[in-house]
Image (cartoon, rainbow, N blue to C red; front, side, top):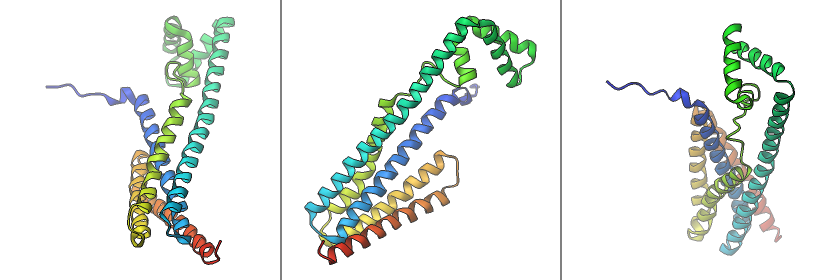
Length: 236
């Protein structure tokens, strides 16, 4: 008889993977909606394949670079905060070890341990690796897995690009008469998928997330197509 596995022991790693997957799905969703809005808007003004390709590529590159830059800045700020917090903790451990031991004991007590057990656990954790213990218990930081801004930037860039390729290819590959319907159907189908995936990753019911995605994407395409049609009719 095999022993049951315990996935709960790896809950932190699982949570991190789910966060990355959720970010990837949302990045792809942004790429789909924003690029679809651009190419459908241009399609309302012209049927020129070169104009559609140029607009779509410009939207893809601008959006993916913007997402990557924004994610890099955001995660860099988070990493800087983590490094600064660890530096402060290291200094406090050096200058006032007894106070830090009492603080760690109190934190463990707040997690449900008795005073005696918390004190013993704090002493053992401090003897093994005081900084790591305080980082995990007090700060909620794993010193070995600080957030990486380059990983976040590349993940955002890739997710947005993958999402943006769908409406771009859907608008330029079919014959002129089929471009708009193929794009709209493809985009709405993709939004159903990303809405369902984001809801499942967040342990939520998919119906509402799918509806929000589809309505938002349809509205974006409708508004930009109307604007493009008006500009095209005006000769702009």
